[in-house]
Length: 190
Image 1 (cartoon, helix red, strand yellow):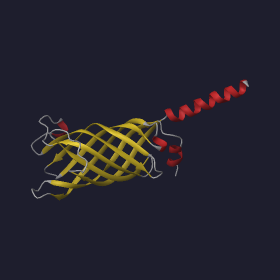
Image 2 (cartoon, one colour):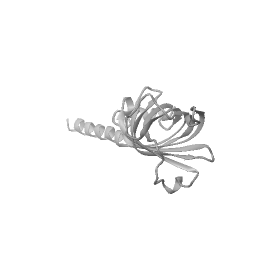
Image 3 (tube, rainbow, N blue to C red):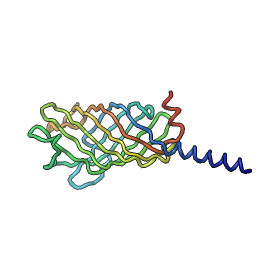
Image 4 (spheres, rainbow, N blue to C red):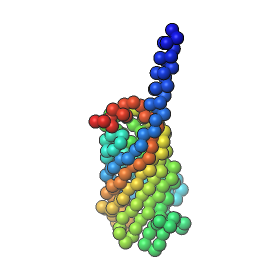
């Protein structure tokens, strides 16, 4: 009986170790974004922005849909990395997204900070979002962590007033996720 109790404790510690493990994340993606979304978060002085991308990486093949609210006017206090007369800086004020993986598992994230830096000369934008992992389904049921979403966006379509509204997007997601079930290890090996 004493040995059985020892085995049970060892098994529980082993399972806890699998769930406590931090998984480094590096995933590349491509897709599209829009300067409008049917989902409007109703933030004052902000408009909805949506990304729809797909890619592959440390957690397996995925799609990602993200809806955020972006300031409608450029910030008067941009960071030094996005300043000067040919750059516009638009903070993102709220949002969330869902990664869907090939096995059907979902990884939910919430925007904690982010912005778009528009280079008027290069006619491209750089978007950087910090995303808090808030759980999910399947192997991500108990997941937590922080991810950084970085993309380059190039305009594809403009509206009547010549404002870019539809973009092609490429980039990567990096960071760490904890609480991924053991299935994650098997998926990486495939």
